[in-house]
Image (tube, rainbow, N blue to C red; front, side, top):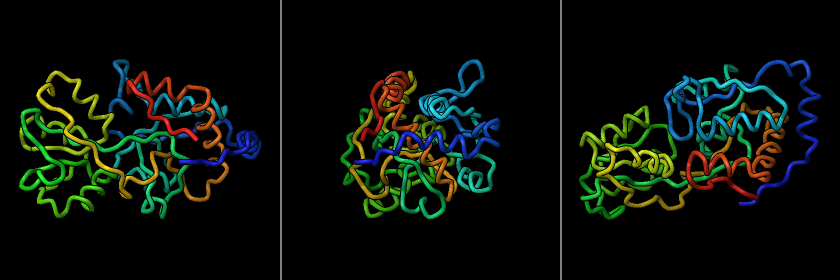
Length: 257
């Protein structure tokens, strides 16, 4: 994927054009439901994770203050458009459907969806899904992919509000397989209680997954979008994104020009 380089003066222009607002922190919307290792609460009670720390790095690059604003995932876009938050930074894929109601920055990371099931269960994807019960978090690109690509596979798709609900039902045996972000699944499988499960396959490239993960913004916030694009390019080029990705995800998922 190729992304045009934004002129470095965009950050300066943003700051000058919004001097009256400079004292107000940018409210960064993340899901109020923890989504480790991207967003979760540390033992201190503060939010942390790959995207939380990357959000702070982006705000530092723009010389702006950040305020993490947990919001229910199902209402996060309405909260953005109502002005309760200024941006969404919560593993939100850039899709044509979402671009009808909000704008996006350039992508900053991309990972595929992954199928997870019991290690002892042979599983051929997608032919072997017939008759199985699969869990997916609703309002995600994985849910969109499941509806579009797996509707004729014979699988029983069950949607959940929260990712952890999906994980728990897999562990308890109420689900045969789940489809979720690969990086999140790698972290999930590190848990002691998940030692009998494994990634069976990853989802292929599909229009449902969009162009990658970007920051969601209200339509018309062109100066903020340009400033964030410059900041994203900066933290990728100086290695900050890769360092945080390796720290939290044990691999580099950053999207390079």
